[in-house]
Amino acid sequence: MSIWKTKPLSVLLNEASESEKGLKRTLSSRSLVALGVGAIIGAGLFSLTGIAAAEHAGPAVTLSFILAAVGCAFAGLCYAEFASMIPVAGSAYTYSYATMGEFMAWIIGWDLVLEYALGAATVGVSWSRYLLELLNKYGIHLPHDLICSPWETLKLSDGTIIEGGIINLPAIFIVSMLSLLLIRGTKESASINNFLVVVKVIVVIMFIVLGWSFIDTANYTPYIPENTGVFGEFGWSGIAAGAGTVFFAFIGFDAVSTAAQEAKNPQKGMPIGILGSLVICTILYVLFAHVMTGLVPYGEFAGDAKPAATAFARTGYTFLQTGLIVAILAGYTSVMLVMLMGQSRVFYTMSKDGLLPSFFSDIHAKFRTPWKTNLFFMVFVSLFAGFVPVSDLGHMVSIGTLLAFVLVCIGVLVMRKKMPDAPRSFKTPFVPYVPIAGILICLALMYSLPNESWARLIIWMALGVAIYFIYGKKNSKLNNPDK
Image (cartoon, rainbow, N blue to C red; front, side):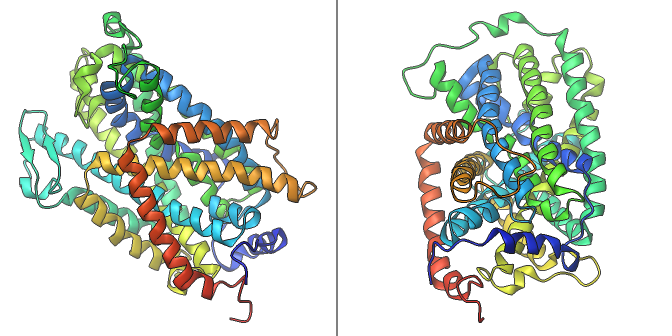
């Protein structure tokens, strides 16, 4: 029994061919691109952009987005090769199983729990902030104890400051509703997501077009504020730190790869979905950040969880403010939908491999979805959304995402060495340079994140290693074929 034993490519492809016995193939290339855009455009744009500008990069947050996108592009090319080779649910977990063995697959799968589950919780908290703004416009005020976690200070647009509540109930509500929708079915969820993505993209374009003529160029001076003497506080190190902060926003193409087993033509559709969504969103991100920092001096975004609404208020289109908030809520909803879906598919695959209890791979007789996993994460994600501050969640998601990207880039190098002749409908160009560049950039961005993020990652991984040796190793179907 070896913890480094790899899962043969032939076995993975056989699992993909038998998908009609489990998950249904319902997603077209267009749906996969929409799935990626749905996950990418969200909290990173509408909330974290302001934090990155105020605390790290200033107006040069646009360069932070470009730096993060470059790292994503290298990792995305590696993801595309794997997704076209191994069209099975599970994303980086499955790819690691085929290249680096069971233990590394478990590590990456456990890391993806951190990425997707806490990512959904992060967006849930931001969703609740914009909901409060919408309700306040109509004179509806929820009890303070029910809109804020105990360890968080919340500042409303009317100047009200809430020093910690009991629970963030709106965040729990939206996570629960979307989890129940996912149980209903992937096709139904994708249809709703496609609609939400159209609304969201229209709003982003509207913000860019309408806000452009109100830009005050004085807000761009200095474009790269002088470093304060502390690493990560402005200057070039601030741009890197800003990239680490907004990296959270680029996990959409990663979520696309978790749906490979539900794609109609994964060999063609996965590379289109992964790279297409990344290109579209990077262009929109840079333009959006440029307009936002041109409308408002970057320092005013400090502690603001709704910077897009703050910036748009400086234009002459204040009558559209309510519409903007509604559209942002729709955008956040699609992000959570994709993340909750991705998380359930990773656990479904790990359970099928015996590394987790069979409970997590039970398919609903009517809806053909891993409904028990959806219910489990409805509770798990709700607890984080209801009780943990958004800034802590965002940093934990970023470091988990970057670790996943590093391992996927390493996986391409290993697979090219071990299986150079395996069929690939998409090949990562300029190997080994592209994967190595992806590894170096992602490690550099991990280094730029706060020490607390590293500490939490280490604790989370230690817990995962313990679970693997207590349960996963003993019940692995690959290492225990007679079980």
